[in-house]
Structure formats: C-alpha cells, structure tokens
Image (cartoon, rainbow, N blue to C red; front, side, top):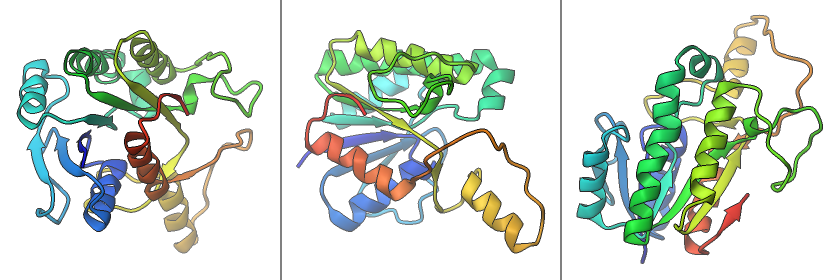
Length: 223
C-alpha cells in the first residue's frame, strides 16, 4: 500500500481526498496543512501541521513520513487576491512548488500537482492538454511558472488542470460558485455572473478520485 502526503488538507479537495481514503482504504494518508486539522475524523490517517512556505518544516515532515507520492493541493487560487498580492501568490504558487520538486527529485517521490485552466487565455477554447499556454492573469502566470518547474524536473510527475472545483466540506473557509449561486437563489436574491465564459465545473469528489488514480496508476504528463 502506497503512502501519500497531501498539502492543503483543510481545503475542499484536501478534505475530499481524506474522506475517500477513509471510506476505501486504498492508501496510507498523511494529511498536512498550515493550521490545525479541520476534518472532524481523526482516526484512520495521520495529520501533520506543515507550512509549505517553510522549506525546513516541509523537509522534516517528508523525511519523517517518507511518502511515495505527494498530492499538492495547497495554493492561492482566488484570481483577484492573487492580482492584489503578487508576492504572496508567487511564494505560495511557485516557491513552494520549487521546494516540493526539489524534495521529490531527491527522495524519488511522485508529485501530483493541481493546476488550472487559467493557464490559457480563453480566446480559442476548448483546449487540449498540449495547447500552448497564454495566461492573462497573475494567478495564471504563477501556475504556468509552477508547471514549468515541474516539467523541467527529474521527478515523476503528473499535472491535473482543474476547472471550477465545487462541493461541500467541513468547516469551509471559503465558498465556491455553485454553493454561492444555490444560496442566493434559495433566498430569492439576484446573482451577477459573467456571460462570456464556458466553464466545466468539477465535483470535488470526482477530482479526489482522479488524484488517487494518478498515484495508483503512476500517471505522468498533463491532464
């Protein structure tokens, strides 16, 4: 049985991975996040506080638990926040990835990296995995830089580009567009959304399954 380590385990996708592992027992799980564990169940996996901006702490956690694979879900994902906080965005979305890539190379760990459709400009979609990237936001730029770090590494890697991940988890720190629209409509409130985008929302449970399959099947490349 493989041992996987997740970053950002308090987030929506991170919690869904934990939920799936506990239900199915397919892998041994080390869940990590910067703050205290927000998932209500504490048995059946291990939890470690780990700040991805602290390279020494990241190394210590990885050396202690010796994972076969890392599923890297932690990131700054809000486009407007990234634009307003470019330095922090770079640290979270690029520098942290550089730390993980280096450790994955050194210790022969598979890296499953969560990316985004924001690597494209949206001018000529839908896109295939091998289409040229052309981000139009700083968030997209940061994710392209992270992808390049990974692709140019000697690590075993797979990049999963996600689109509008939605779902419900425990003690949510932020909402998502599906829950936001549902809540507004239930209250009879108007909703204002763009009318020039075609998106393909991804259920968090489905994405969690894809992450685990990527580990189990030793997936490589961009998906």
